[in-house]
Amino acid sequence: RKLQALKGLGGGVTTSFLPGTTLGITELDLGNGFSLFDTPGLIVPTQLTNRLEMEELAAVLPQKRVEHVTYRVNPGSCVHLGGLACLELVDEPGAKAFFVTIFVSNQVAVHVGKSDKAQEFREKHIGKMLSPPFTIERLEEMGGLKPTVMTGSGDSWSTACMDVVVSGLGWVALTGLGQVKIRAWAPPGVEVIVRDPLMPYEARTSTEAYTG
Image (cartoon, rainbow, N blue to C red; front, side):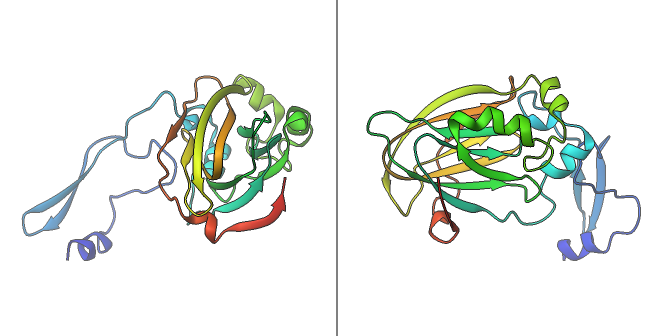
């Protein structure tokens, strides 16, 4: 009944996928003495979304179900998340390929390539094959991309061992065997962290043919 009450609300309630729509506390009467309160969200300084313009926000914030995809990525290769972030598997003795499952908005262009060509590729294709942002100038305004190095260890080809999260953009789950070292690139000040996998089994059903 509460859900039906929400669906039956008339005017006075504005919704948007863009942040900042709720400017004050809004009370929604659900009936039978119950109310739902909608409040303004908190600004988190380390989130990428605080750096983006409206067109970029519209691409980064999912407007429908995210269609995750998995690639088998070799050491010395990387995954571009538009031009806003890049995750590379560091090539070092004993390093092995890992499955990389990507959870970002469907409007964020994903590309797998070689780590040693990443900067050149990004500068050449940003705004086209790699977007958002839509110009190299916008990336420069955000300070370019700076690296964060993290490590993990996998023990299964069916269950992810860790998520690498780029705050305000999305995350990548890593699945494989052995030690893995990641160099994650994001604009300076944007938080990049490792956490336990939120959706650890998705590599089973979303693997693409590409091997890089």
